[in-house]
Length: 235
Image 1 (cartoon, rainbow, N blue to C red):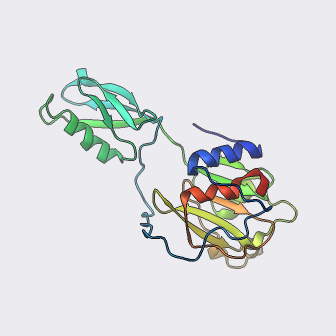
Image 2 (cartoon, rainbow, N blue to C red):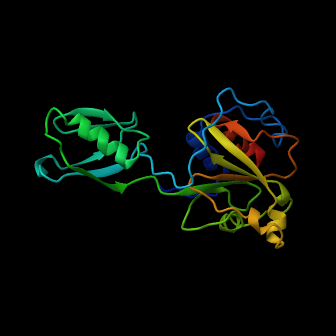
Image 3 (cartoon, rainbow, N blue to C red):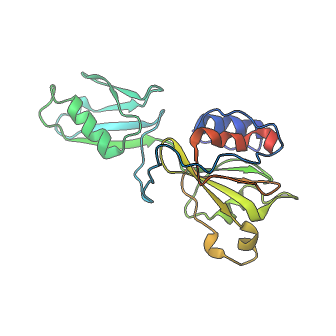
């Protein structure tokens, strides 16, 4: 599940898979991405230390402390279900480990008496960030430890000539449907000013470095709109 690439088309494909399809904008850069009107359903902010949620393709071991004959290794299928021995299919996509444990215990309620279950992740979605726009090597990168925005830009090869470093756009997921948008002045950060704006990236963060200032942008946009920024035409 790890992926690195400087190929612009692959970046677009990656972002489309992560955030859904959106209609490419005709101009070289989107001048107005979203209106200032508030969404009908306000996005629910996620906590900073949010627990990992199971994704498609995740693999984990199920350990039954008192009934080891039920021990098994399962994979989250593309439809979000896992296949459990003696029980069948159970949907756990998007659940945390404690939630998945409770779901599996419930599934085995008619087979085992109050089973003690331990989930041990073996293969899962590794933390990453996505860099787009006017950086030397746009793409998806591993997020290793504490990484600030300015450090992530260097990981992506640094700024290209003509990059509007004073208007870097950070996209951060706040719910399953909405993304928070922040405009950060990396030019000041690199000059030693406003260093407090050099935010630490969180898993799944995406940033886009444009060639010019955007006329207007909403503080929250639908997740499906993010892909427009990462279309190769807009690089």
